[in-house]
Amino acid sequence: MAATADQSTDGGTTPAYFVSTPIYYVNDRPHLGHAYTTVAGDVLTRWHRQRGEKVWYLTGTDEHGQKILRTAEANGVTPQEWCDKLVEEAWKPLWQHLEIANDDFVRTTQERHTARVQEFVQDLYDKGEIYKGGYSGPYCVGCEEYKLPAELLDGATEGEKLCPIHKKPVEWLEEENYFFKLSAYGPKLLEFYAANPGFIAPESARNEVLRFVEQGLQDLSISRSTFNWGVPLPWDEKHVLYVWVDALLNYITAAGYGADPERFAELWPASVHLVGKDILRFHAVIWPAMLMAAGLPLPKRVVANGWLMVGGEKMSKSNLTGIAPTDLTSHFGVDAYRYYFLRAIPFGTDGSFSWEDFTARYTSELANDFGNLASRVAAMVGKYFDGALPASTAHGDAEQAVADGLAAAVGTADRKIGEELDFAGGLAAIFEFVKQVNGYLTEQEPWKVAKDDSAEGRARLATILYTAAESLRATAVLLNPVMPATAEKLWLSLGAAEGLGALADQTVAGAAQWGLLPVGTTVTKGEILFPRLEEKPAS
Image 1 (cartoon, rainbow, N blue to C red):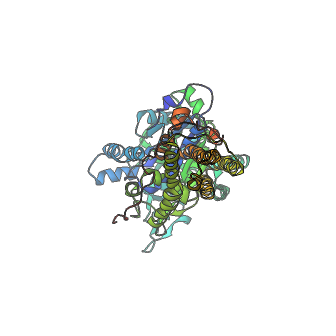
Image 2: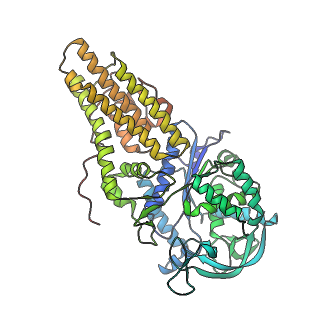
Image 3: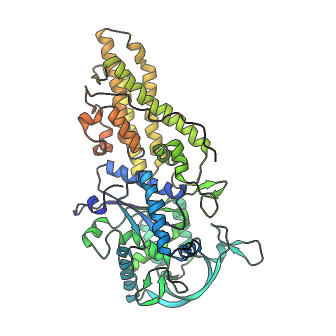
């Protein structure tokens, strides 16, 4: 884990770049879909750290609601015992395994969260934004969501209706509830969307939300009275808060709402909420309406990623398509795992995982293009210059083309990853530069130049190898947010720490500056960055 929340903020007035994942429901262990969003958020925040910015990355777990209650009962334990077990034995260990550098991990059963939640909803109740009523209609326990009849699918028997996501029967819910006056916020939301066109991304997600709100909003039931696993309403403890309202509030309770005003002012509003497209409406409609009602600033962006698909279905435990991330990391390694999903699937679109595609990209892009380049350069510096990085004294057009290619790659990657959240596009720019360096070596043929023992020949050889090593120095900085362990190995192999300091202290802008790798540093051929893959393990 990275720094704690207190360590990541210095009490100053500079706003932090605050990224959040959804808080994940702990009815089961995490699968690839959960890890996909979390790795994306980690790369995004690491990239902004590499810019030299103050960053705060939040993730956590959603632990209340009927689904958790039923799961715990089915396993013969209390809901709290179930949540504690899953969080400590599955969720937190996986994020550590995947090198997720989150600054905080919020759990909705923590008192620091529940107390602030009660204060928030009490404030809305006191303002007249919440009233008592009754609800009857379809409800999906899997989604923990009230469903509109028009969006349900027909089941196998007459009158049976299915959730369009889980493909399981919905339940008919009738109970006394409290309601939030969501319908009053439709015009205000549309006005906000118009004034902030970048609030929802991608464009397809924005269009979906616009169509939904333009049709008119219904008031939202925000309590349940038929079970008690949840946050009690402070004015009526026969009711517990609807789990989604409870969950959405994690973004402000973790940031210091109601407890640390200075910290809250530094962290809120969030820079980016990363969400799955199936929970977009909660984050782009209900959440901003709740904040408007409370008089709080709205987050700057809500970015919806697509689904990871298996056999045409969304990857999930309920559909029996959930694949454990460790099934892949044990075969490909953690860094290759982090790279693959962001490189292979454009963020914001659905994408399918396959062993074959992962294997092909690992072999071609990571092992051959990148790993082999690092090995060749280190080996040649060792062979021809006894491991001491030589000076570049014959910098010509070919070298300038590489330097220009680096500057272009840094500019493109910084824009695409840091601003557009186009991870695939940013990584493509970096690896196009890697290909350019490979092409440069192929054209310059240093192994042939080495046969020329003249002063000119030695100078030319030195320039070629310095150019390649300097290119790898910059590549290590650019790939550090994506593949931190691999980038660190490369950084140490190049001897960069001797004259430039820790890799974590390098900046994206600095990566574009040519000639930073100090002459004379010791270049060593370390372990192979991406070893040859063994046979695919049996499923």
